[in-house]
Image (cartoon, rainbow, N blue to C red; front, side, top):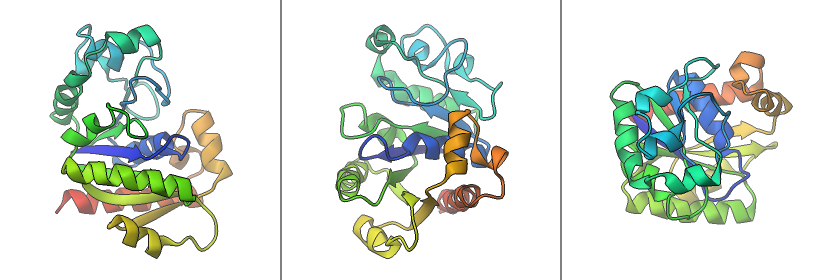
Amino acid sequence: MILAVTGGKGGVGKSTVAYNLAAQLDGVVVDGDLAMADLPAGHGPDLHDVLAGRATPAEAVREDGPVTMVPCGRTLAGARAVDPTQLADTLETLDRTHRWVVVDSPAGLRADVGLPLAVADAAVLVTTDSTAALADALRVRELARELDAGLCRVVLNRVGADPSTATVADRFGAPVVTVPDSDALATAQRHGHPVDRTAPDSAAATAFENLAAAVYSCSAV
């Protein structure tokens, strides 16, 4: 199953959610932001190489870290050399060899944002509860609807006490999973680890367990 993790703007924690969700699902996470990669870098071929025809998708899969992943290159020259239209074929190839393909999609409404959504079986939309973040996320929600990417869950990230989940669920037309503001999660991400490895009893680890369970339920529909 190809799952696009998307968001209306940068800085809402989309990459953190994608990385930790892939860990919970025991899937492969693909850094699909071709211009502004944010997941841990790897050694060897990366997504830039695949989309430029220099490597196969299998050659770009890194299994030597805490989460299986396809990293993306970080150079401007590499980004310019890719053929973005090959992303769909790449994700579908990975989908044939991995039960879960979690794509850390570009943020916002750039032209390449729709590429993962167009091929995804479902989407998870990440936002914070700020007015600006919610407004931008609603625009991406409409794009996902146009591309027929079913919205599995909205992740309300970095929440404090008593988040307004009912209001957000009503606005987006999908159930909400909350992820608390968490020093444990921030520390784990800085060191390139999923939080369930470094702080398995934390509220953040529990939140990602809940999100994974919700995604499982979406895949069974």
